[in-house]
Image (cartoon, rainbow, N blue to C red):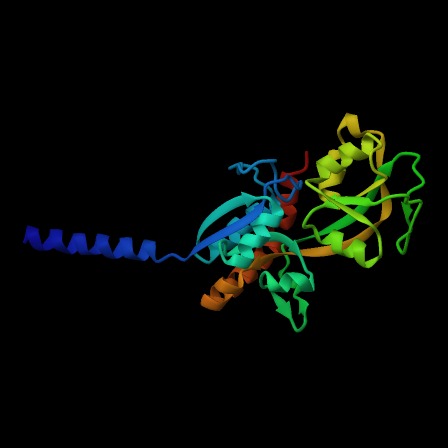
Length: 259
């Protein structure tokens, strides 16, 4: 009798192990540069307690759909290349551009991304030295003598080129603002969530933001074509869960990251 019970118990353990291993795995990448408050830290490390708002939303969505989540941090251009190759299942946070449709899949409503399924919203603005004649009035730039600096791989690079503005692609917003302070460049186009935080540093007090924003964009979790083809229902459930958590817990998360 004991042998029968032990055998049955072993069978249950085996079934439990199979069930656990059956959890779908998601490998999702995001940038290794800080974008406060969306993701924190300038490294490949991920802070367990305060990784960033977007990181927490991704974790919530993965947990809701029962996925085994692995997060990795990469340089942004490398993350997009890994997405195209199917080396990662998804990346965040990416704004929409038609060129990126070759790299991955957005939640779509017709021919446009479904804004209801976004992870968040971010604006790009122009930054200059105080007293500089460089400006932006919402329609056109003025006072520019040279190129505008912007991080390589960011969507603002393409936006500026469409406006026939010369662009120097750089390694990071931090590098750009340092060069701007040193007088080596005329202006920087950067995400406000990153640049506004950096401008709080005393050493960058000679710089300022120009209003209005150049552009405001919604940002998404972009899945690989490979993962969408193999498991479309999982991807759709992830986007839906992400949207629910953003709506229900976005304000609470924002409060957590107010310093």
